[in-house]
Structures are given as structure tokens and as C-alpha cells.
Image 1 (tube, rainbow, N blue to C red):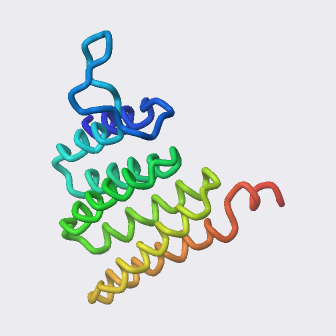
Image 2: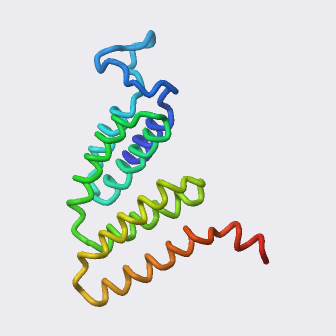
Length: 156
């Protein structure tokens, strides 16, 4: 539930990428919606993978909005959240899912950035079974990045 709230906050941020003063209140007495508030909400997620995924999503939303400095700060939090995910395979899966989501949205640069992170996460998997599962996941993600599903369906 906290993840959904954080992502909703990120989607509701006004078009101005500059965050409002933290102590400023609107006429309704509520704190203004900012990406920083969305990231702060996401930091309260107990599940490590969900917290990391949510923070990465907020960071990329900031980049889309033109808030590069804010995105960098949020992505730093996302990196720290990713580092505490115990399962290396879960990291590969998470970044692969993100890459496919970006690909479906036609966010090519973000898709490839997430894929590169997935590849990097797979490099530290020592277990042969886990590494083979990671490679299979990366292969299926690569197919989606190189030949997205809509174009495959349209050609049939």
C-alpha cells in the first residue's frame, strides 16, 4: 500500500520540477506534492525489493519531468535500497521488469539503462543455477528491447 501511495504522489506532482519549500503549505493546509515527499513515503516500505523498485520509478519520473538533480538524489536512495536486496537474482528480475516497462512506454534510454543494471547485477551471481536463471531472464528482456511485442504481434 505504501508503494502505491508513493507512486501516486509522484504522478500527482505539478509540472514544475522545482520542489516547493518543505514547510510551505497550500491554501488547504496540506503539504505540496513533491517528488521528495514521494521518495520519503517510499523510504517507509518494509520490503527491500519493493522499496528499491518504487524509488527507481520515482527517480525516472523525475527525469521525465526534467528534474535531473532531484532524480539523482532519489536514484542514490534507490541504489542504497537495491544494495540491501539479499537475492542477487531478485535484483536481476527487478531491473529486467523495469527495462520491459520502459520499453513498453517507448522510453528507450531508460529501458537500456535498466537492462544494463540487470546485467551488472547478474555478474555477481556465483551459483550456477541462479546464474542460468538470470541469463534466461536477461535473454527474454533483451528480446523485448530489441523486438518489442507490439511489432511482433503486428507482423503476424
